[in-house]
Structure formats: structure tokens, C-alpha cells
Amino acid sequence: MIVSRFSFARSDEDELIKRVVKEVKKVLMKTLAHASPNPQKCIAPSSPPQRNQKSDESSWGIEQRLKQLEEKLSHPRYKETTRIIGVVGMPGIGKTTLVTKLYEKLKNEFVRHVFIKDIHNISEGYGLNDLPTILLEDLLKVKNPIIGTLPAAHAAYKDQLLKTKALVVLDNVSNKEQIDVLLGERDWIAKGSKIVISTTDISLTHNLVSDIYEVPPLSDRDALQHFIHYAFDDQEDIALGLGIFSKLLKDFVHYTKGNPLALRILGRELSGKDETIWESKLAALTQHHNSPPGKNTSMMLQRVWKGTYDGLSQNQKDTLLDIACFRSLDENYVASLLDAHGPCSSDARNVDIADLVNKFMINISSGKVEMHDTLYMLSKELGQDASPLDGKGRRRLWHHHTIIDVIDKNKECFKKKTKIR
Image 1 (spheres, helix red, strand yellow):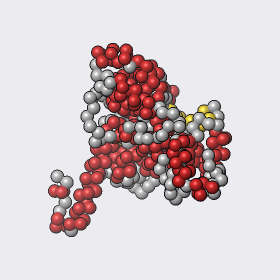
Image 2 (tube, one colour):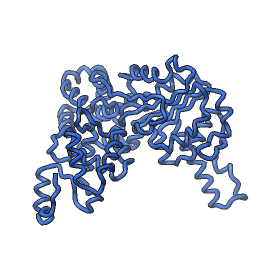
Image 3 (cartoon, one colour):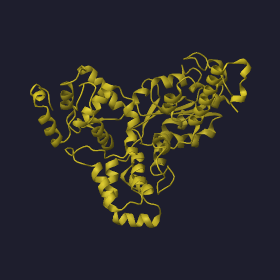
Image 4 (spheres, helix red, strand yellow):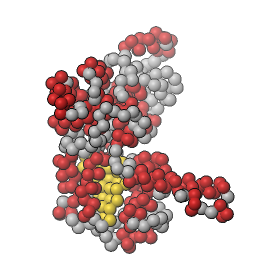
């Protein structure tokens, strides 16, 4: 169908191929932008079918969060006010699920509305240039809109857009350029419009939003129900599981710290498995700091964080992996250890730490540096590899057997070392 739109008489073969590729990319990009949110598909599209094929969504805890978000966005006192709300939180915490529920609930109150899903992946795969096209096509119901030069991409339709308020939901935004391309100078946004931006990077909301909603983890009760939903097939299995797996269920819930995606991944992975497998999995995930960091997190569980990790600069990656070595220690002590090595200045290192906090990869709690257990395990596994900063060999040694082995094989080198932690 696409090829038939072009004339071979007017274009050589190379030009035709370029135009076909461009058209196909546009179709694929629009399909991705409007697909029904399904985080599981995004995480492991090639994974084999699981025994438990329940819906990817469960409702525990969602209504309370939806009510809290609505209060910030569309409370009656904001009826005629333009509101931009940032929905923030760590990967897998339920941002996409929440903003999807919000959009479905509110869209009929607006003549114009648009939900653009997974903007990070769209821009990674297809670039930024066509994002305004998706936005304007949905808001105005026109095909191939005229896109102006950025940041005035919406200029040709400004008067038309200003006549009617709109609901705009931008899901999984990962950098400022995406916001600039989609919202431009924001002078086209009609009074009373509501705009929601979900992101794992709270710094993107600075000087932009009216308010922020940080999606909280599930309560222990909701997390347990969420985990059970995916770990057991039916009521009979649930009744049996609550007896046999009672302590293990609580231990897995504690490990995930209320992260819905981690709970879902583990629930599906353990569904249909016997108690021995459950115990083995928990032991691998919750191993002691001094045990060897083998490949203990499942590939799917790693990907809860891997996308955010891959988006870090090399200095940020090194800072994160170094911090994992000193998790739960005093923040000033950790800062002094980080400053003791590497080419980064103290100020640059502080900027990297602030960026990691903004991306919900670490947090400072009661003066201690903390990170989620799932990210900690991933960091241990990644931290074994050689760092480009030290040229060769491993810089982070986690297990005493490994440390002894490395020192024995490199005695002359270690005699010259003055900064080893």
C-alpha cells in the first residue's frame, strides 16, 4: 500500500527507498505511541509464555494514587487553570499505569486529548522530529500537519489550539529535548488545559510544572496482593500458597519494597514452582554483601533498571557502581571515599550524585546513602566488569576470595597502590 503512493517515473530507486522507509518509520512510530500500555511487552518481547497469563494490570493501590493525582491536576479549584503535573518515581513503580488510568478517566471531559506512550523509546528508535506530528494529528484530527521550525512547531495551528482546552499525557519522557519538541514555547496551550508528564528524572520538571506527584511504593498489604495475583493461578492455588509460602511471600514483598513491576516479574517467574525454587531464588536475591555477585537477578528483573542505567553518562555509571560498594553508609563518608580516586573533581562528583538522586537511583535517608535492592544487585553484577577509567582489570572486588586471588596475582602492582578501600 505504501509503495503504490509513489511514482517510479518521478524518482530514482534510491529516493523511492528513502521515502518508503520514512513512511514505514512514521507508521511504526505512531503505532508505538498509541499502543495500549503493556510494560511487560517492552521488557521482554521474546520471553517464552509463562504459566500464569493473567492481565498485566492489577488494581491494588491504584485508586488511592489516582485520587491523589486528580487532586493535583483537576480539582474544581483548577477548573479554569492550566495545570502541568510531573508524575515521577523510580522505574517500575507504576507511573505509566497511573497516567493511563488518569487519561482514560478524564479524556471524555476534553474535546481535544492525546496520550503519547513511551516517548523515550520512540525518540530512541525514530528520533524527535515526528513527535509534534503525533501530538497535532491527535489534537486536531488532521493528517500530515504543517510543522514549524522548533521551538515554534505549533505556530501554524496556534489560533486553532487556543480555542479549546486539551488533555495531554506524555509518558516516559527521558530528556528536556523531548519536552521542548512536544510543548515548544507553550504559548499554544489553551487556558484550562491539563498536561501530565511521567518521568524517572525529577530534574526535567524543574521550572516547568505546576506540581509534582511522586508515585509511592505499594503498601505491604497491596504489594502482597499484587504478588499473589501473578504468583498463583486460582483461588485453590492461592489458599495453598498462603499456607506453604506464607513467610516466603512476605520476604519477596520486603525485598521488592513495593515496586509493582518487580513484584509482577518475580510472581510470574515463580508461578508453578515448588518451595525449593522459591527459597533458592530468594537466597540468590538477598545474598550477603560479602558473597560473590554472580548472575543472580533474572534478566527481566535487571531490565527494571537497565534502561535508566544505560542512559547515564560514564562518570554517572562509575559513581553509581562505586556507591553500591558503600550502600547504607554515612553520606559524608561515602563522599570522601568517592573523592579519593578517579579523575572527577569533588564538584563534578557531587553533580553526578545529585543526578542519581533525581533519577531515583539512590536516595539519602537519615544521612545514609541508600538504593533499592534490585538496583543494588544489578550494580554488583555490573560492577565486576573492568572500568574504562582504570584501563584494565576489575576495580570493584566484592568477595574476599576474589580479593585474595587478585592480590596474589598482582603483588607488585598492589605494592604501589595507596588508595584501596
